[in-house]
Image (cartoon, rainbow, N blue to C red; front, side, top):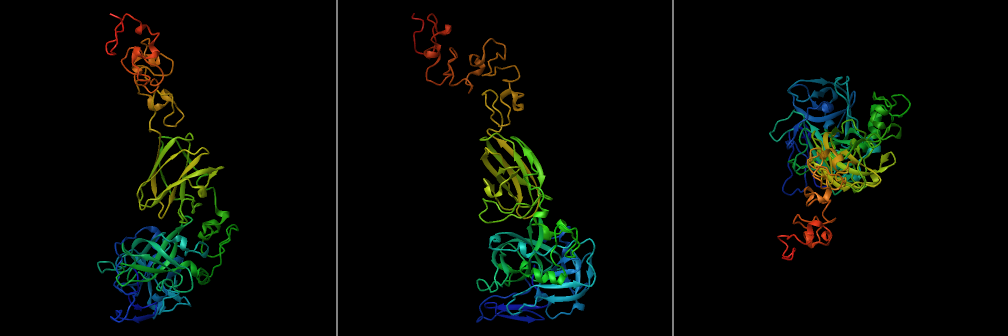
Length: 537
């Protein structure tokens, strides 16, 4: 996907020489070591990015039929964010910004009234590789801008491993371009300083691997999207990478330039409780992403608004539109999860063995957390357990129900999604004659709906332990042959005459002291399988 088509450039050594050529990019000679950024780099394994939310991703062209030379993102109604190297040696009157999914298909173009590369941009080192475009007229009304990541939510080393979504109109592995594609990757290094990191990562840039796909030629200037506090942001601008687009790439960190972007937009910061559009972006107070992390805009968290789950319960839900109050969990080892979450209170007796299984059903990567109760809410920092499988794999936690109560939280790792969540307890069903609430639902034995069809509960068989002659045969509980082998009877008393060791003491029937006074065992009747002359004949 990314990297400039019309102005191709090479990098040799430690962010050393960048050669800008109108026709192509000269590869380094054998004596030159290092790497370069070049065109012809495909979006490997990209898929069409046709969702309404990403209509803000635009193609930079010279008009219909001219092809794509870069990508950008609409961050305000008339402002596009892109890479500074995309704006070199071009005039604003040349550029036409395309809104749509395929430049050879249906879409709309907008002209340009202003181009602004960042003042610190260095074409030799690609420091400050970020730029802004002001449209000559507003974007199509159907397109919603995607905000630039603010400094208050900026990337740090704690975001290593965070999944990002790249989008762009660049060259594919089939040497075609002009179709908007996207591919996911993960941050491998954050260079949050004013000098290069590891010799090749530009200041205020982040690196990602591309072995499974990534940006390429024509994708330069395109977005790297992340989620923070339930809002999607442009966190990176595609800048450079290895020549084949198969090893690594580097994007400029947008949050490092938030003040400069705000100045271009002519905005300050949104005041979150005054009823005014302070920053002029068309969004007021808590509707403005600037206020996502403001305490003024934090309503009840997911646990305060939680539903309830009991043993055997199952629910279908979605994190779309959920509350995004939690991002750091005590069992995450400094990682963060910044999408919206949904919680369910577990109404289960303390100590009950519980298994919770959550299966994403909408394509997003969701995780599952078990949190202890904390008043009316729950405690992310006190996280008891978590299941953090990748992609759309099911998540499962087996645990003993906390004595103080607890919550199961379905958390968005990257993209909000639908899911199913099922809770089972103990042996999963009630054992209908042992006097125990096996499944932890508060109903014991025949009082439990699980036992409705069990012979021990429908009057056709003895229920072993309730003191009632359930089947009307004159034998109650463990004295009834129906209860032979019943857990309620084993270990209690021998049944004298059923040829079974009912109480598990190694003595059967009349050989068991329990049967000394039994009429069945009085002298005069031979027991046929105990090796004893019971009747003395």
